[in-house]
Length: 563
Ligand code: TPP
Image (cartoon, rainbow, N blue to C red; front, side):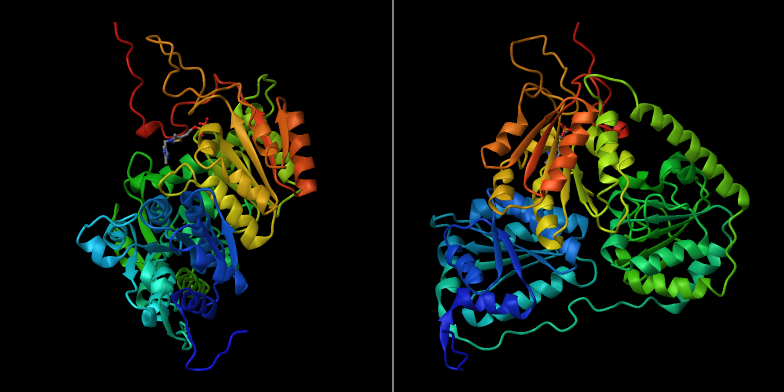
């Protein structure tokens, strides 16, 4: 039995768990091995949930998603050097996506590492992590473990959230020290109230708008200010455009949604309000011809350096999104914002035309299936399961799913994000199931699935309600490229004959094979009813889809065949 007596001496492992639990950490995602196996055991002994993965990268992506979904740092535990490096991809991705995450890694003997004398899994991990993280710390004595964990927590969640690295050398984890109450971080992510004059400036600009547009980013979704954001959007009467992970912040069928008129609103908006959305490549850097050269920008962000990154920001509002939106809303109630009626009419006309065009694609009679008809079947089933969290990655699969699958609740879509990274899918799906208890549907390109496919064993081991749908078109983007020069498959080709459904059966999950929209729908309905791990092998025509999906502007022109 644990004694809380002041003079009790305990191992570093125990002190780490003390510090984590004192700060509300209840779940750790990781892969064990020297020197962190006992840390995972100690955590489990103390009621912290430990989820063991097959690869640290997926564990890291899970921790990142946990951070995004809960607003508290997601924890990933890794072993030294190679395990650390596997997890680092996820930590870097968390930093880029502004998700709060802490990677805790064991490391080798400092004295040997620093003299490069060749320790087991030797690497200067803090130096390696630093360029990819918001902060990187090492704890060099067991007495400082509580301080180290506390600093990592505040660094991960305060201001603009991001990935934090915490290095715990093997000798610190195994050393003994007197057990003292660890620091409890008070208000780890304090509110940051915007300056009143910045709010007034924003409202004055918005009053001049004839064709306003509100863009919601995943920063807005992360802020958990759902009600006040909705009030602001509705008070302005302006159309809004959700970035992919902000879908559902207001339901996709909200009358002010301009998602189905994206090109029109980007090109014609005269005053744009960016809320937790960055003017990066995902928004074509705010540049013409996508955007009007005359558009004027208001930006709500927590990080001042974000302003003016691409277009001059005429009204920057620095603060946390919840506080800034609330301040803007209060000021707007005293002002007159009046979009011209034609703006609404133009958007409605464009929406109607685009939806009609899309509808024809969704109901096409094609066999084998293309992306659209398979996604329509999924959409129709998910319409009865609006609590389901949708995870998506791939190229055509990702882009088409974003347009076709509506999201009705905040933070119910997780995807390849700012980097467009493949391999997040199963880690995100696992964290979504673990953190929310809601059903999860991961819509995966077959190439994308391969990056973390072994985690279906993790899903089965923990009996998570995750349905993985693999869009099997036998290739990266498409599966019909021919290599004219040898018997080797072309670079984009994968085995279209793969039966991905049989993979999950190996682990006791339920596999489905679907070749028609009706089979897709039946499989998904059955899987969601069973709420057990399932995988649907969804056969798609290898000859549909485009290279790089919708990223045509980043794609090199097609290679000329050599004469
Ligand atoms: N490696 C990483 C880590 N991230 C990437 N984005 C890529 C490689 C390049 N890439 C972009 S999409 C993609 C790849 C490999 C896969 C596209 O194929 P698939 O998942 O089958 O989707 P589809 O277009 O067939 O729907």
